[in-house]
Image (cartoon, rainbow, N blue to C red):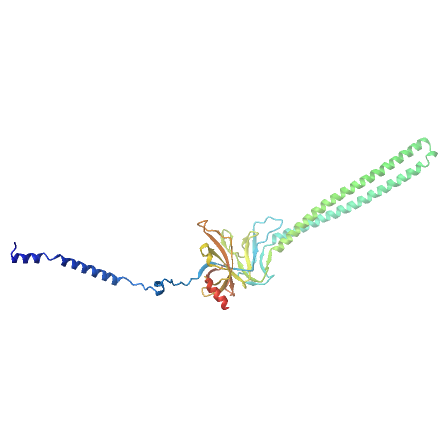
Amino acid sequence: MLTETEETTFTERNPRPWIWGAGIVALVAAAVSVFVALEPRTHVPSKVASGIIASRTPLSLRLNGKTEAVHSRSILAPRIAGQQVGTLTIVRLIPSGTRVKQGDPLVEFDRQAQLRDSIDKQAEADDQNGKVLEAQAAEAAARAKDETEIQTAQSALSKAELEMQKVELMSRIDAEKAREDLDEARATLAQLKETFDLKRKAAQASIRILEIQRDRTRETMLHAQNNAALMQIRSPLDGIVVFNTIWKQGNMGEVQEGDQVRPGVPFMQVVDPAVMQVHVQVNQQDLNALNVGQSARVRLDAYPDLQFSAKLESIDPMGKHGDFSAKLRTFSAIFSIQGSDNRLMPDLSAAVDVEPAHASARKEQAQ
C-alpha cells in the first residue's frame, strides 16, 4: 500500500479522465461557433419558404443583322448585244450618296467602239442597199428584154400561121418551108415563156440574197446604236445612290471613274431610304421567343446615338444548316424600321433588341 505522501504525488501527475473529455468538448464547441459566425447568411424570402417561387422578369433578345431598303433597284453593267466584250470602261460616274430622281444619269461607259461600229455598219448597209437597187434595175431591164422577145416570137408565130393559110397556092417546097417556120415559131415562143419564168425566179433569188445581207448589216448597225444608248444608265426610281463592293482589278472595292467592269456585274444600286428594314439571322434556340408583330429597338453600330422603333414582320419558315452542325439551324427574320434619318443607309450593321412578348402586347393595348 501507498503512503499518504505517495498517493498525493500520483494524483497530481495523472489527472482524472473526465477532465480531458471536458476539455475536448469545449474545443469542438468553440470551433463550431467560429465556423457558424464566419459563414455568410443567405436571406430566404418568405415566399420561397412557403413554397411559392418568385418569377423573374424576362430579358430582351438581341439579334444582329444588316439594314436594307424595301424598295431598291440594282444597276448592272450593260450586256452588249451581238458582241463579245470583256470589260467596259467607266468615263462618268455620279458620287455615292447622291439623291437622284427617276431619269437622272447615273453612269456612262465608253461608247467609242459602239459608235465606230455603228458608223461602219451604216456605210456597209448603204453600199449593200446600192447593190440591191442595181440588181433590181438590172432585173427590170432583163424582164423588159425578155418580154420584148416574147412579143417578137408571138408576132413571128402569127405571121407563120398566116403563111400557112396560103399553103395551097404555094409550091411544094415553099409549103414545106412554111410548115417548118410555123413549128420553129411555136417552139421559140414556148421556150421563151419557159425561160422567162426561170429567169424571174433566179433574179428574185439573187436580189433576195442581197436584201438579206443588207438587212443583216442594218440589224448589226441597230445593235451598235442600241449598245451605244446602253452605255448611259439612268436612275429607274427616286432615291439615293449606293455603291456595291465588287471584285475589280485584283481586289475588292467600289468602282471609280476609269475602272473597268465586266458586263452584267451589279456595281451600284438606287435605294429608297423612306422605307428601311433589318435582315437578321435567328438561332434555332431563340426562335420560340419570337412572334410576328413583336416590337423591337434598332441600334446602328456606326451611330450609337441613333435608335429606331421596329416591328417583326416575317420569319422564314425554312431554316438553313449551321456552320458547325447539321442539326442546328438558323432562320431569317425581317424587322421593319419605323421612321427615317439621313444617316440610315443600307448595309449598316445593326443590333435589334426584341422586347418580350407580354411587353409588346401591353404596349399595343396601350396604343
